[in-house]
Image 1 (cartoon, one colour):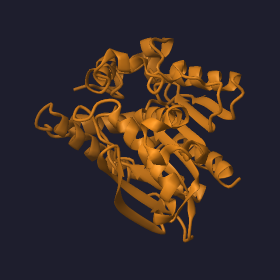
Image 2 (cartoon, one colour):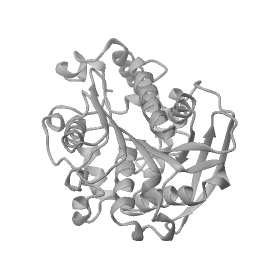
Image 3 (cartoon, helix red, strand yellow):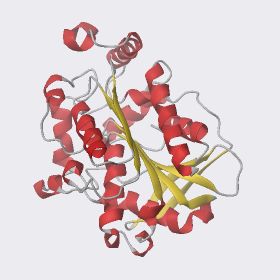
Image 4 (cartoon, one colour):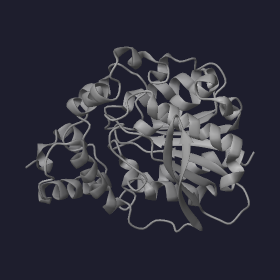
Length: 335
């Protein structure tokens, strides 16, 4: 069984004290859990849900939470709408969960979405987009863009002001958030008739530790392993099961650094983790948006791992960047 001391010294010595506590907790749980029953995708999803259940305990209480479905890209997509306060029409943050495009659902990121709703004062619409390998690129992208377009056109059906939207996501969800925004800007006709005005409704993007098409980097060579599920084999699975056609990996909706980042984009709050193989992708995107003169706030959080947003029960940095992102969106949504 893996031990804390099996983590390379240059990684574990860089942890903040709270990040070390989180990793020790995670390893204790990993070493103490029963056999999941196999290496199937169903087992992986069940294990991910079980692991995240600890981190979802507590957090803000919503005024109202509603589970429903929105039709997009030929599928009735499950969504969860958190409303932090009573109002006829609230602005909304559409949240897209991480999980390598293969795991994750409305429950695994529920505390994150409630914190965003509570601090921002906006409704949060969490999206249970189709996962790989059952659905490959661009299905999830078209679903998420379609839901944004639907809310822009019909937000009043959900008590949402369709003219004041933001997109947010972590990891794979950050990639889908930026990809959906670019798709709605550059090719709305691929999304459908409702998409024409959707891009103009997006006031902000909250992008947490995504991968934006950087092919190689220092951070990719230094970080990732059994301690965070971000080893080279795990990351390679994304290409194998989600980006099944090599051409897809060059799409500007996946390789975002190849997209036109000089043309107008919503304000962006971009956060990376220092000890994450995807760290340099955040640096590249943040710097590129800054050079382009976009409204962007970006930084890399020291001493933390990929997925640190989940660990708010133990990790102050998770709560800080969630609250800061929520306030970043709040200011743009209230303009």
